[in-house]
Length: 289
Figure (tube, rainbow, N blue to C red):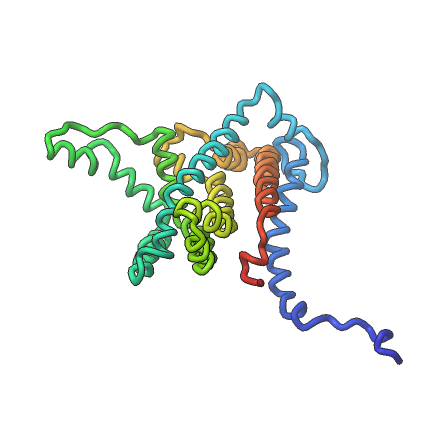
């Protein structure tokens, strides 16, 4: 018998990866399929996998439905949060790679440490900081400057909370991207007469862009799903699409409508993700070459 006639043998890697693949199928794909099925179920029913209708999507896309404002708020706040964090995180990431020296590890720990504390606990801490007769008011009154401005329960404080919560998710991919820029190229460009700004624009920024784009993508995806910031700090002055999804699945008990909103959100985020990933060299980001 020739070797070509032998039955195919399952690779060792595939056999060892089977438990992980099974876990991903059960933990990720199964809930996603269920949500999609509910999106096509009869409105205000639980007839999943037994009916098919586009009524839920029609209700969402109906011109008289104002749920689109939730999409606008979520996408707008996420975009603003991403841009602000890119401007804040880049100097910090540059410092971690080039300026902080032996203090870089300490600075990194300072940014990682808040992640060990519940997000809600940290947000309620800011409520106590800004609330009337709280820390800010007490400090200003002690200085004779009167009560502080009322910043709680506004869209601005919601954006502040998002910037505060998602800073590490922008910072560390950006730091990784900057660390991948070879120092020899920077020195060579400087030796050839390029100024500091030209070196940054033509060498550092393009080579660090994969890490920067990953940080921006990760931050944007997480920020679109932000709901605690709008509830705790914003006092629901802004209704995000995730909040609408939560209401549909809980108080309204309209699971098909909530599933339709979730599917539309996944499609929007998925399209943006694929658009960004198509511009990335993942082999280079993962260090494969």
